[in-house]
Image 1 (cartoon, rainbow, N blue to C red):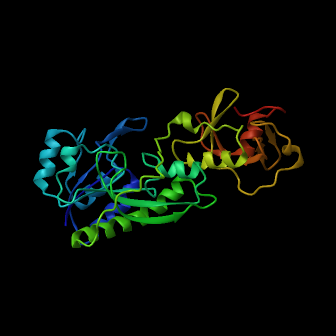
Image 2 (tube, rainbow, N blue to C red):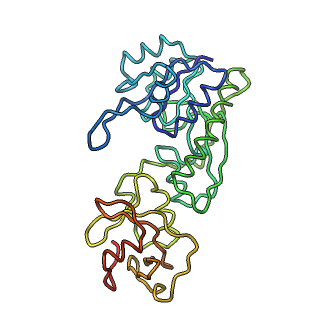
Length: 312
């Protein structure tokens, strides 16, 4: 089939790579416009755009998919199907109608669970044991189109959004390729999503990543892992922002830390503990404002903690 691939972040790269090594003809790539990054505010191509440039595939970067010029360009390419992975913009009806087999989206959840921009973050935060990826036909709703295929993935006890998404990007790429193969042969039919079991996964903003140590330890753990690497878990210490890496797993607290109130800190020679609504948790790495990540014990020694001080 002639396909036009739409995607933007590194998460979408494995899917594009799979298509490039398949029997399908990737005639162009659609990605978000180059963005200014870093202190120098230099324009940078998206990871998907960079790969397309490397292999010599035309790259389309419309400011918005509804632009008439984009619709004209896409129509001229004559795609049979448009696979899409984390493109980052809603596809309007006139554009959805261009490919004869529609737009096939790879979404990183088992739909109808966790529709929206942050399915992996919400799955970890809410303590799901299993998640997965789904291919479905895009319609005008928010991840509501009929399903073409699924693959499941176990959420490990120490998974962050970064580690889980990396695995899903690989298994999802294979699922997307199998889906396009099935569409090409006419052997695959879409099935409507069930009416029950839908949940929403809106994008997590920075304020959503502020850790509340008044919740149980298991909630603190899930919250931090869900926000790692982005938007980045954080708290406040002495009125300054303090970034948090995932906590140390399966660590037994010393007697001095057992009675800590939520957020209260206790520093031993090789460990720093913080109280929660249940048992205390051990910090691993922290990032003071304007500095690099460092071990929690090194940070505590440099901060000269006072008894009773707390994260807020």
